[in-house]
Structure formats: structure tokens, C-alpha cells
Amino acid sequence: MSDLVAAFRSRAGGLVVAEGKQLDKPSLTVRPDALGDALRVAHEVGFDHLACLTGVDYLPGTPVEIKSGPDAGKVPKEDGRIEVVYNLYSLSARQHLVVRVKLPRENPEVESATGVWKGADWLEREIIDLYGVKFRHHPDPRRLFMPEDWTGHPLRKDYDGTKEQFINTADGKDVVSFTPGSGW
Amino acid sequence: MPQKTITLNMGPQHPSTHGVLRLIVELDGEVVRGIEPVIGYLHRGVEKLAEEETYLQVIPHSDRLDYVAAMHNNMAVCHAVERLMGVEIPKRADYTRVLAMEIQRLASHYLALGTFGLDLGALTPFFWCFRDREYCLELLEDLSGARLTYSYFRFGGVRFPPPPNFKEKVRRYIGHWKEGIAQVEEVLTDNDIFRVRTEGVGYLDPKIAVNYGCTGPMLRGSGVDFDLRRAEPYSVYPELDFAVCTGTGKGDTFSRYRCRLDEMQQSLRIIEQAIEKLPDSGDYINPKIGEGAKQNRVKPPAGEVYARIESPRGEIGVFLVSKGGDQPYRLHFRSHSLSNLQVIKHLAPGQKIPDLIATLGSIDIVLGDIDR
Image (cartoon, rainbow over all chains, first blue to last red; front, top):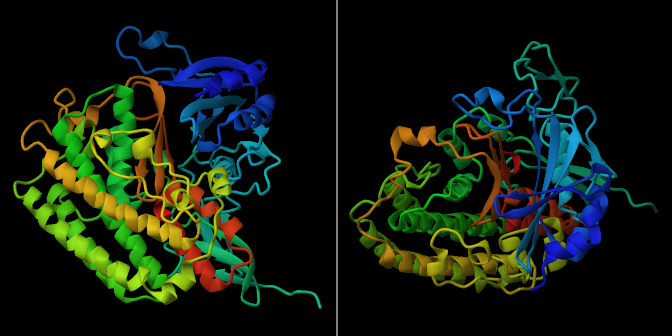
């Protein structure tokens, strides 16, 4: 059985900026502008199943690892990136590959994977909705769970959940605002 | 004359959409030209809540995702944490877990088949399936104390050991289930009307199924024999003998129905084997982690893991980022129904409304898992 990760590295090795592991799976970090090419190469090499597509928000100022005791103050702080992690899998070869990109939190933007995997459609809409990441060339970049006119991106660590938003109906349409309205 | 289409709203409250799913359907006469599923009516922010809770507190939230197959959600969370921690599960706990999961698979497939028949107008198998499902829920209640959302699994094992009379009760019920499945076969599989309404309807090409990220009976019904219990074995599945079912392999709704029915037969095989191999004594939870309040102080080492299991509807995965504290930093649930439901945008155009209902029923979605 051929090593698909090695095949990926030989074709797209130049796009990789960092290597690591997700427990026991190889994890490759690619440049944000190179993600589209990296995913296309991964699909061609044989990773046909997009198992998981998720975002992680590393809030600046939070420790990289929670340690107790005398080392607690020496732990480095996060850089404030938003990571988008793609867990890829090959059904026939049964091999894993994790591809990730690190995006700046001010304007996180990356190419959509919908050209490669149609199933990435709603998975990316979830990240658009809950993290505010922009996916270029996404066929339908609307929010998925939250109402259309919701303010903010709930899964971000600095989302202010204390400012409650209310959904009121006006003229038969639902409108989201910060004022409670008159209720039912 | 230009074709005029009407927009029909199958609103979030509808007997056939299997939950709070809204389908905005563009119809040309009775033929579907376009479909747009709208979700989010059951979004409870479980992933955001998980960032503020201990790992033990996440388990009851996980129950309520795919609430029809709650044991598997529990297993996914525990599997992810246990892989990060690298703990061993005692044999008695592992076999109890497999029993709980396979009985839950039976219960979940009974519900799927019963409601699928109901969508097509078959009322009798609906009642028969729910009667047999009661046996499953009774056994799971004996194990965990609850009928639907159990919170039974703990890190390193299970909450309670099986009660003393559990084994002979399961052996008795296996006979009931075998009779029940034969009855359902007689009324659905051997039914001409059912065959005409499901064969050839909703054909899903295997390559498209893989591209959309479909898993479970959606994928296996199209002929791709991929089952995580065999491909990435977890728990004691390597020690158990069962077959991976692909229905008829033809990719239509009848194949997916057949796949679920065959999986129920395989689950009975697994239950029979697990009952023989279940140790009567021994630890039901890893003593290094402990039970009760010690579970609330579980601290997996810092790291990232994506752990997945085969639930009745497909692949449930938990993507977990831990920073070494007692609360997860990021907990994402990979939803089987979210990926499976996207296929409806590909399958629906060109179908008539009753075929759309049959296809939607054969996808077997649970909105709790889609919306989280």
C-alpha cells in the first residue's frame, strides 16, 4: 500500500510551512494562500474523504498550556490565530492526513474546499457563521445556524454572550436586534 | 410557454421531516426543481457550552445530540478523552459498552425503519418496530437508569455494572427481536407497494456519496463497504465476529433500508457473542481514574485528537483540543447527519414529492446532531 502522505509531500511539499502530529496522525501546516492547491493535491493523491473540518480560536493572551505550580507564569501566550483544521482520510488506503492553516483573526480568509469536496459546503458555512472566516469562491456563503442578521460570531473566544440579542417579528419577518421588543 | 415554479415551504414543524428541518422546495407541478434545506432550529450551542464545562459535564450534553443513539455520542466523547489520556479500559467495561452500543443500534434502526415505513404510509410496522424498541429501551434502562439520554459512559468505563439478571434477560429478548425482524421483513420487504416506492428511488452514486462526506448506511447502501468498526476498530470489536452490510449495493432507498435491516441482524450476532464473553466480575471502570467525583477532575494532557466511531447513522467524531486543564479548549462534534443531509440538494431535483419524502426518510437524519 503506497504511502499517500509521502506522495503528498513529494507533490506539494513546497506549500508546507510546518509539520507536526495530531496525536498519531501527521499534521501539515500550509500557507493560507496555498490551501486550495494543497487540498487539490491531497484529493488527487487519494484522500477522498473529508472527515472533519473545524476551526479553533486561539485567543491572544491565553496560555498555550495550562500548568500549575512554579512554571505557571512561564508558559508562552497564544498568538491570536484562528486555525482551520482539515482531517483528511483515504477510504481505500485507510491513511490519515491533517492539513491546517493559521489565519490572522482580524481578517481570516482562505480558499473554499467546495471545489474539491462538495461536502465542505455546509462545514464551511458553519465556520463562516460561528468564526467569521471568509471562504473565497464558496457557492453560498451565508450563516448556517444563526439568523441572517445576527451580530458577532458565537464560537470566537471574545464573543460577548452577555449582550443578549432578541428575535422579534415585524411585518411578518423576523428581525434580530439588541432591544427586547414587546414580546408575544 | 415558460415553466413557472411555485415555492413550497415544508416548514420546521412537519410530520415527515424527522425533526425541525425546513425544506424550501421549488416545484414544477409535482416535480421538485430545486430544494434548500434550512437548519438551525435546534442549535443549542453545545460546542460553546463545552468550553465552559468540565469533561464530565460534557457527557450529558453529548447525549442530546443524536438523541436516538445517545450511547454512541457518549462513546465518542469518552473515546476522544481516553485516547488523549492513553488509558486502558477494563474488559468488563468494554463488553458492557459494546452491549450498550449494539442494543442502542437496534433501537435506533427500529426507529429509522418504523418512521421510514410511516413516511410511505405503512402504519403497522411502525407500531411493531416501536414495540420491539421497547425491549431495547428496557434493557438500557436496566443498565443506566434512563430510557433515552443515558449519560452512561464514563472515562475509563461505565457508570454502573450490568445488573445480576441482565444476561438471561438479553438472551430472552434476542428471541423477541428475531421474531420482530421477521415480521417487519414480511410486511415491508415482501410488500410490492413498498418495493415499487423504494427501488430505483433516490439513487446515490458511490463517488458522489464519498465526495459529500456521507458515512454509515448512506455510504454502505451505495456499495462502499466502509465501517469504522472494521476500518478503525475501537473497544472490543476486533474480538467480535460480524459482517459489514452494504444492503443491495444499488444505492437507492431500498438498498439503504436493506442495509439497516441487515445491520440489525449483525447487531444480534454481536450481542449474542458479547453476552457470552462478558465477564461477570471485575472492574467496570478504570481504577486509576476512579468513579464519582474523580471523573469531574479528569485532566487529559495538552494535545489535539480527532476520535471517531460508527454510530447507527454514520461517523460521529469528536475533535478535541486540550490545554491540560479540566475543561476542553475546543470540542467539536463531527456530525453524521449534517454531511448526509447535504446530499438531498443533489438527490431531490427531478423527483416527485412522495419520492422526496422517501429519500429524506432513507437518509435518516436526527436534527439534534445536525444543529448541535
